[in-house]
Image (tube, rainbow, N blue to C red):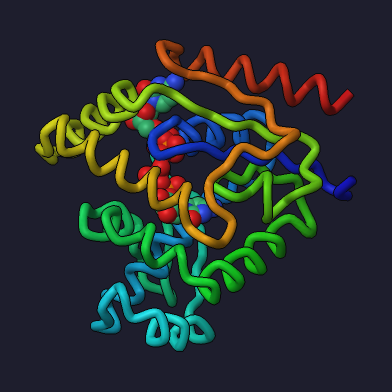
Length: 224
Ligand code: CDP
Ligand code: CDP
């Protein structure tokens, strides 16, 4: 078992992974690692370099020159790409709709998986993503697979966008979520799939507080 406690949270888009992981990390004083933000940052790096998102060789060549850093911030952690803040840019519609393609590249995954494992060497972590329980942290003490109906996930994303002043209609969001889930579940390398030893938590119709307390109980059971 790992020297420092590891909680892996995987699941499809907008299941509530980052919201729940952040709250638990604060309560437990664990480091929160948002691996989706890292794949998004690489996608932004491709855009800034003027590369086409389907240019796998070009994007692979960028990797050695890329640094990604997280810094505390409210309401969200700040994300830096080569020292430049990209916290908002990584959530843009263009990046959201191209991140699944960029994250299907072998070199991108190998590079980020290394970085993610390094972040667990000297502290307990809660890490969320798609392949944390299956690939990044296969020995994690706790593995959660967070799901919710597509309708509810689209509704959540819709409300979140509206609060930010973005007006994308519900049907479009639903299609985008379904498309991303399909790509993430069908790629060749470490696709989105529930690890054999993961505990599935269905959050459909459950409040954030409700999900937090459910997972906290699971973590406490495994810490004992
Ligand atoms: O928050 P949201 O569900 O929109 O996505 P995210 O966690 O920010 O991840 C964005 C994208 O990065 C996913 O759709 C995947 O294509 C990719 N990703 C991945 O391949 N592996 C991970 N461990 C995390 C994210
Ligand atoms: O990280 P992931 O894409 O899985 O989801 P998220 O960004 O944490 O959550 C998407 C949205 O759903 C956020 O606006 C959350 O506040 C909301 N949410 C919710 O309404 N109820 C839950 N039980 C969990 C999240």
